[in-house]
Image 1: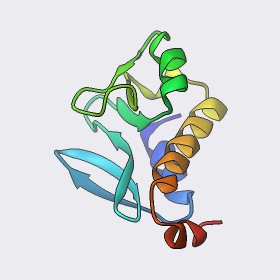
Image 2: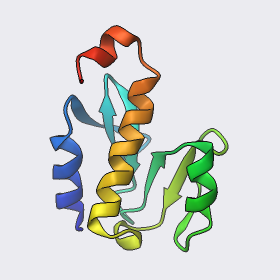
Image 3: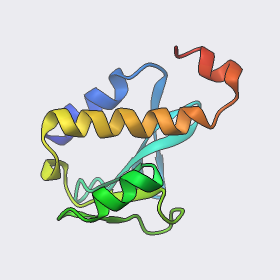
Length: 111
């Protein structure tokens, strides 16, 4: 998947907006980041569960995200670390995890 396809996919998820923070492209739901992309390298950070963290961090090209809560976010070196379907699933999961922390009334808008 190239960066434009990645961007288009993220923006296709209901309620997703994009913006720039810390010189990175951010995809957000209700102003809460679920993916943060380095536009120079196309590496990106995404949220995961502590259980998923172990599995993901063991893969080549994936490590704990710097400056993010320990065992809650991973940094993926480049877009092709995952196949297209797996990448989409991981992005959706990151969005779901961020959305689950928002108030129930806000969550209901996206069901």
